[in-house]
Image (cartoon, rainbow, N blue to C red; front, side):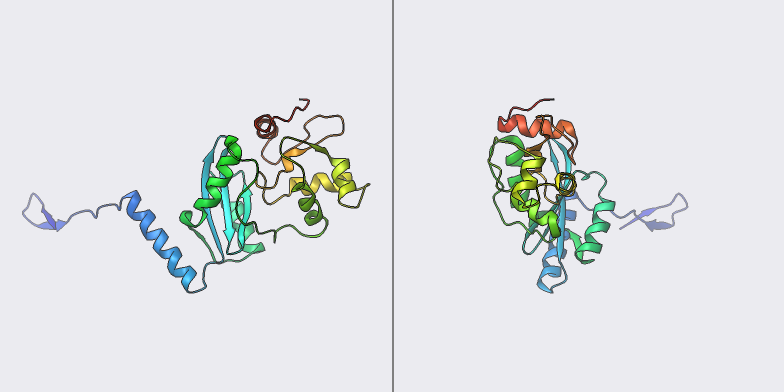
Length: 208
């Protein structure tokens, strides 16, 4: 279609921008084709929650990463491309179930993450710690020292703190349930307020 100039000479009309729904449809179709051809190793999406914007990523094995930088994900996406695969694509539909499971945990509608998890980003002693974190019951806490002992290295208290900070799946794997021996919160990858909020939702009493 064309529009006339004042001189009577027609020029092309500006192309219409595709709607948000159309963009989402095209993105989903692209993700499906990439997966069918074995070209999609990591799918990702952002998720707005009461803790802020999260970035979720998954592999065919399950949810592999949760980070608190959904509003500015470039650094995380680069790390995932390096650590897992450069064949990474935004594909929100492929993370719908994981997103609901994370949202249910944050809202207090669930007591544990429901769905498959891929622990390939947790390695070495950090993997041992991650496995122990999964054993901490809902609504309870453990000290860094207790987790170190459970992981078979009672003196590795600082290493447990590092492993919690590097937990690739916070919220899904409850590193927020690990506190200092004096009952104080300690640090959290999503910030102290986020840690406090998660523990409050679970009914775990901790010192400030």
